Image (cartoon, rainbow, N blue to C red; front, side, top):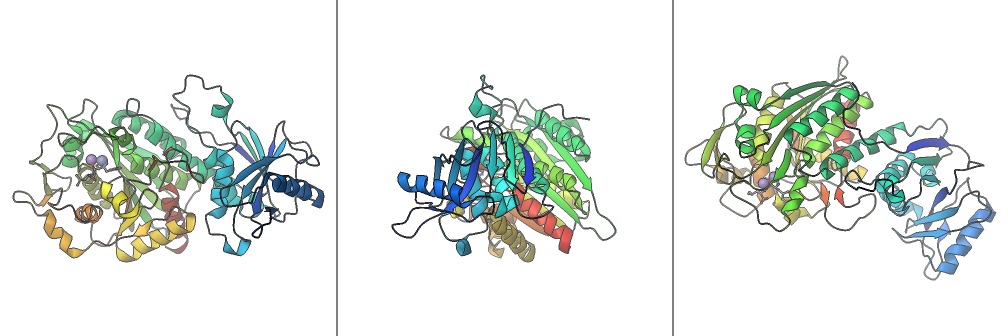
Length: 502
Ligand code: BES
Ligand code: MN
Ligand code: ZN
């Protein structure tokens, strides 16, 4: 079945060993430049694709404009000897031996963001790192124009064609295109407003994406959820006129020795707080409260596209947290899937309630690893800011996920789950309370709550992306405003690593 809803279409990427003789009309050539010494202008990074004459033209133009080649600096110049309309020089700042892992991706992203209507680019950035250059360009050029009435405007059509120059023989950009497509798919889901993305619609989109990728798909509706005892999903969802769902997507790629990985993502399509209602200021940002679910869906689809030799099973609870006459009340007690009872002291701590059900269900499959991700706590942003996810869980696996995340530039950071915090989740009437009575360590308290539901022997990681899932600040690198797609690349890096090393 083809997806009922059209999905994200990446630009086409052609890998080439030579500069095209007849590039597309108005094509732009993107070249990396580094900073000169104190008084010097920018210099073009040495490339076999540019002869001395072209380099001279670009450098002379940069010098006359006073461009220094600093990080994030982009300068458009003309180089008459080259067969392109213009050259976009993008600054890498430091000399080659100081380039951080994510630097090429970010520079490509800055270039991608500044294209402003260009449909066709050629780049030599790809000769430094093909995957990073392609991912950065696609993600930097990403636009969400679904809800613009004038979709034919050039800026909304955006980048359609990338020619990636490289001297590497038999290079392929397919992996990078698939990764960028997954991130963009997660962004599209996050950017779709709550008027249009509610649990049933979200489940349908997950199904369409999953079936197109050859995944096994199962959807539990509200009746099935109530019957099977998913008290957390039902409790959170019952204040809304749009009933909850639980979606399961399975990629079965394991050969004889392949591992099994469970993915779980928070899918609150809108979080008002429920009866413990949130303040009006910035409440609209809670459209991003399904960012974990979006990333998990994109990641399992990507695992299938990349044919990873492991089993990956995603369990995605979806609900809308609304206040109403049918909503759960502060003080209510619910029974999670699996039997644990929870006193709901604050209906705005809803993520952990739907996740507890999903984690218990995911562990019934006996996975070797479990990665769960969620826009779970405002405390994450207090502790780590808007770009650094916090990772908690089993010590070894937590550190492994954090290291992989740092290597690919999503930069998750390991956080502890101190034993004493469990005391704070004691309830006078139920097995657990859903919040502690204290303001301290809110991110870790949420992680401590989730730990209660992870089966013994499962290596697990919980990634809190409350800030990083949604960019409310200025665009930077390959990240525009709105949905970021984080932590899709972190989870995929973990799946690739597990495929290789077990
Ligand atoms: N979805 C929010 C967390 C959040 C906050 C995400 C800001 C993105 C940006 C979550 O459901 C929530 O409301 N958490 C509460 C927990 C508290 C009641 C213990 C919070 O962080 O205030
Ligand atoms: Mn909430
Ligand atoms: Zn929430």
